[in-house]
Image 1 (cartoon, rainbow, N blue to C red):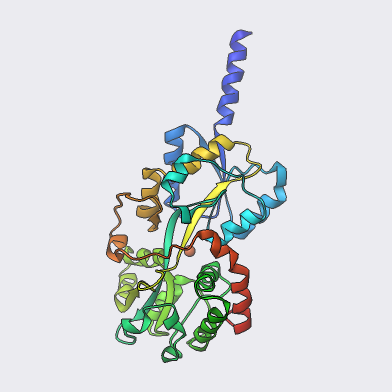
Image 2 (image 1 turned 120 degrees about the horizontal axis):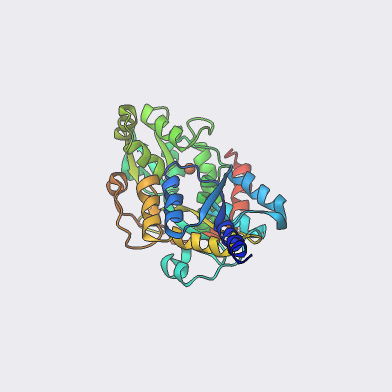
Length: 331
Ligand SMILES: [Fe+2]
């Protein structure tokens, strides 16, 4: 009897060593990230992958019965949407507060890596001096030169939200109008498509997230590196508020069955080891200061001044950003 009892207790404990992770990050290198956690804690990760907005919807529909412990996704506005839907549980962690800068965390979700949205231009066609700020993108001298992904994409909505936060709605609307007037073509494709279009001479200026640039810089394909050679990269607004950054991040879910494991996982993501995975594997910057990274592309991109706007304020202006983009035809 005694022995039997001991076995069932052990089984129970074994069962508890699981974390259900809902992730909208689809990067291969994340495998190593999850393995590192299991090695470190003995907690197995069961991963449900999905598209960003589908995961939010799924957690919402599952309600109190949701098995989800942690949601990991990209884009500050989307993380804030999860917050507004009441999906996250408040988290108190001295470790997370100490390691993650205040502007990159909230009461219930935390950023674990950052990416900058930079300006790229065709060398020999446009001068770097003419594209030093996001404002420059609205200057009539760039007429017919800009290509862009859809204005409805979260990356562009978050950029627009930061412009509203810094300059107010009226000026942001003027800006969006100016950018639309400068389009070389109707928005289409992803960030990498814009980079390729600039390199191919289909347009001369675009914005792109840094990890897409780093991916091409580190590519084995000669055509990818040739594309990079044709373009110049500008850190925008270095004389004022700094380059717009966005984040990937996550939080513990309100109905998480394994709250302790979930908190451990968030704390692990802020560890030196995990922070290095974000940088070396997926070409994002660590949020924790002083992490030694080994990524030739990030080193080549160099240092820059990042916008210090709190991540939560990007969410505050996201709906407004969409309304203005709709009004000015940034689709
Ligand atoms: Fe992306």
